[in-house]
Amino acid sequence: MSKAIVFAYHNVGVRCLSVLLAHGVDVVRVVTHTDSPTETIWFDSVAELAARHDIPVIAPEDPNDPAVVAELAALQPDFLFSFYYRLMLKAPLLALPKHGAWNMHGSLLPKYRGRVPVNWAIIHGERETGASLHRMVEKPDAGGIVAQQAVPILPDDTAFEVFNKVTLAAEMALDRVLPDLLAGRAKAKPQDLAAGSYFGGRRAEDGRIDWTRPAAEVHNLIRAVAPPYPGAFSDTARGRLKVLRSLHPTGETSPCGGCPTLFVRNGHLYAECGDGRLLRLLAVELEGSPLAASSADNQINAIFGTPALSLS
Image 1 (cartoon, rainbow, N blue to C red):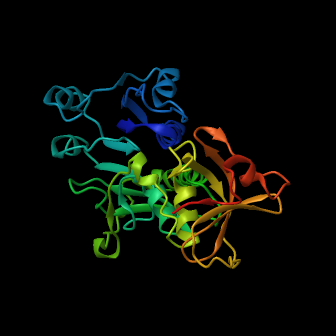
Image 2 (tube, one colour):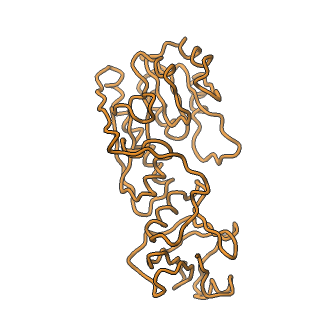
Image 3 (cartoon, rainbow, N blue to C red):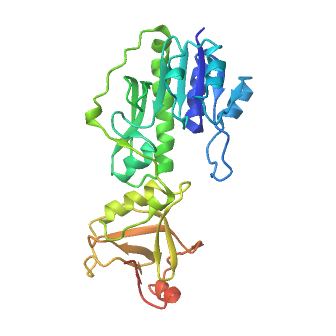
């Protein structure tokens, strides 16, 4: 029976740890994170899953601390796995397992290496993404790939919906390759790093909407940061406007011709973007209160004292 140390967090961590257990891997230690009180925890707990299976769990602030490395080295693991663990693992940790350290990344590598790959893929209008299991090396997300699983990104999918697909893709990819990996038969294919790019993390401020951009770009930003992420927003004369959901823009345009404006038409809320195309907004808040389009075309007039709200 192969012994493994698992660094894991989030839903991908839960599902991939479940795959290892289903295949009879002896998980001798789980390394995870303590949930932050400042973060909305909408995902499942790796620590709770480990506890159900009587697996010892640690959550060090620095997994590369020499004392932590020594503790894990004493376990003499055959494999090390990282499933959505948020901290970088340095060379001493990567050198511990006899048969390599392996990471599950939420993109089709070499595209979207680095942080929050699902969000970045949506922002860039990708029509597919997926999960990749690759060998861990010191350079982030750069090692050879042993398994990938693609999933579609539909035009109105939010990051939450795509992340759920990627979680399943990760489970499928690991389940498929694990027997060969454990038996030493899996062959890692080197990545062509020039064919992809590395992306950094995102902040809440990065959700600020530039309404002068084309409607398709605005829509991609809205769905990329939709709840449970912080949401896309802009500041108006009447306060902060937060847009939580929109519909992929059609070819419909406005006579204004590129004047960023919020208005109601036929009981639906629309924003005109910088390319003159209209974006239908499905869920909007103003200063934290829902802003709903009614059947009356003067809904915006009733709230703002004007038939339209300028977004510029």
